[in-house]
Image (cartoon, rainbow, N blue to C red):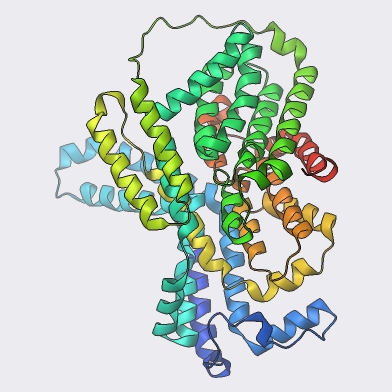
Length: 508
């Protein structure tokens, strides 16, 4: 009886497409074809309506497509909560596929068993794709495209998708690809080892170095790269020592929160900051004075607090025996070339053509120095870039309600609301939607981004690098999985401390 449940889950995707078609056919005559798409918010002429709900109801009646686009966006958010279920279904099909391998060898490639395995492979790949958190909004861009076509026609749909600016997604894709290269990872690991050596390379020294310096390195090598390095080092230097489950979740919560806030020393490393930096003219100077130094203080404070709480267990851990295996040294000129590639990408972040050209030269250099490289894995950068691009596509159709809702909140309720929303959605989605609000004051801009950054460690879906950390660390927890509730509890105190730091410490 498991088969029907598979397609019940799949209906979550199909219902958006069907609803878009039916709603578009019923309301196409009510929509105005004279206005640009999406309809500008100033054309509703409802500034005189004081009640926010009346204003939103009036906009929904005036433009029925608004409701359809928002329902699709809401279903996409709901999909993120089912991502783990889809992934579990994919793994079940993979196990069934592997179990029939010997039967296929005996029956032959044209047998019913071979056809059964082909179907299982297709299903496992399909549900694996549906289970990728970064792919969710891209999947739901299909129902959105159908809805636009049903309401306004093919030309409007093509013009909308073609007219969107994809500068930020392209930049994030390229910077993640470069930062994931072997010389950059080795460089970051060397930096962490220097700080750990100051404490004798004990488990405590490694624990503090990874959770303090690692997230701050994310401001320069990007948060996803920092998450990868920190998670791998934690497995090797900390989790391999079999700490208590309570300390494991506390460390995981610290890691996720610190990575989320550690990328704020610059304007190009954290996806939620990347989504607003160019639109709001936030440079390195602004980020460091308003966010970076506060984030550093919060990271140090939370690490010391957790160290004090778990001091006896941390101090009782014994270092594992160092491996005698020698690693091939990477010539300095290769590392310098990779750092220059990151610099080029950052300096030309707003010029996609130059960014892509730089990537092509970088890949050629990697091939020329392949003895000191590993294969550049583009899967994670592509998924994150795909996520951000799809987010921009959906966000353009949410202006009709975002502006009234955000403008109706005061500063600190806005920040708290941003933290809560981030727990249920990627923080880049929250900050991007904030850029769609016209006339947002600097105080409100700060509150939205501060809340999104602070809440980035509460759940796996709250920050784009979190799924990468989960995939590396999940085998270190009971039953090979991470409990969402225990992760939330482990990250709650650091989240509160970070939020208080952003709220109470003065900006430079």
